[in-house]
Image 1: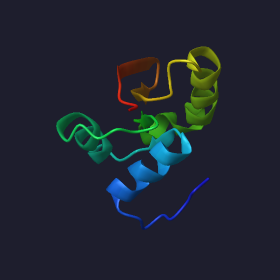
Image 2 (image 1 turned 135 degrees about the vertical axis):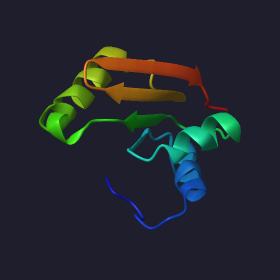
Image 3 (image 1 turned 90 degrees about the vertical axis):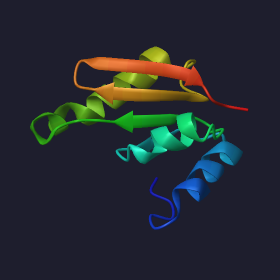
Image 4 (image 1 turned 60 degrees about the vertical axis):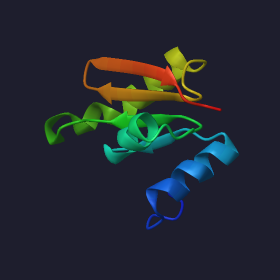
Length: 92
């Protein structure tokens, strides 16, 4: 669900961490928060789909959750058409 769409990024990360929520975003700034600033998170799914592939995006997110459910909490994940990268676990 879209919660507090105008909230600051750090507040969104904290909200997700406290609630054990996976953050779905298209904002690459969250990669900086997680890696450069070493912020803990409940997990981030960075979605990178061009306009030409957006019709497949929802199905790919569902498939990702089905196939990688146990790896997602606390991880930084990048989902692109035909590709999934699951980064280091960042949950503390």
